[in-house]
Image (cartoon, rainbow, N blue to C red; front, side, top):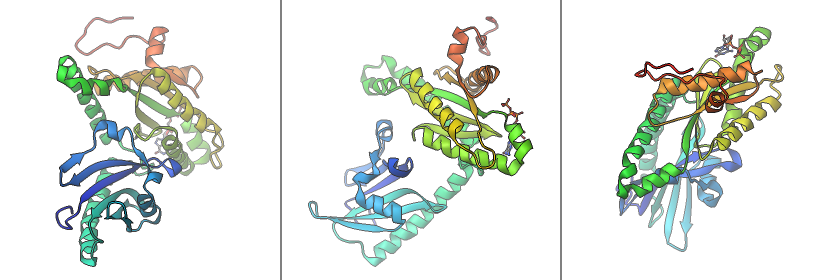
Length: 320
Ligand SMILES: Nc1nc2c(ncn2[C@@H]2O[C@H](COP(=O)(O)OP(=O)(O)OP(=O)(O)O)[C@@H](O)[C@H]2O)c(=O)[nH]1
């Protein structure tokens, strides 16, 4: 696009968050200085959408919007990128002149291909009932987190890697397994259709309760998984408590009150995926045993002697 329409610059923005909290994550920038992809720090710090009125208008009306910037003489063109009538992002093309009808047609052609590509990706990555990321995506996403942590650990003694270490100081990774309490009763009393409706509404509450950087997955059945990045265990607990109370206070159509329990654990670079999920599952079991509608930490349960140290596969010493 940059070369075809002889643009000053082309930026691809992703829309994150919902409603008034919507923000822009600049994914890619193409300009005379080359191509640049967003760094992790930029992804963690998106720009409120209200600061870019032309992009906001493009998203709200799902239409191409053009704006002339008098101070720089640039013409900004914003193209909505939507999948299933949801605007997921905006392509911003900045030129010295307004784009011609031919240029607009070319851009639309490219965007059509890109939308199809995104919609295929979306279909393979998401659970069809709730729209949440699916199990397959979970494995890929957690593997990426673990690989990133291992790389940072390797860079720890390298003096040129100050920035990476600083990123590491931005927080630790945590994983929580969330499970609906007595979901079988909901299905048995009201039928599977209402059960499904509860899952869809829960997914919505979940999206509203966590930050956009946190990743939400439907693990199968009535079990959900969240991966979070936080400075402290307190921050993780606060986020999970916010979600738990939001569910407890929500009146589900016909069904009434529904509660959830969750177990969470800290992720270490030396962990494997089954170890992490296994620990969060043990914490979830503690929360269920303790009366449900609550959050339990694996590490706290371990300190309190409520769970045993989990054995590493290559370690034949059992600790009780
Ligand atoms: N409606 C609906 N039900 C599902 C789905 N997937 C799994 N289930 C049901 O979820 C229920 C899970 O029940 P259990 O694992 O026994 O646990 P529970 O009743 O939630 O009880 P606790 O977890 O111990 O609080 C089963 O009845 C499953 O049939 C789904 O996609 N839709």
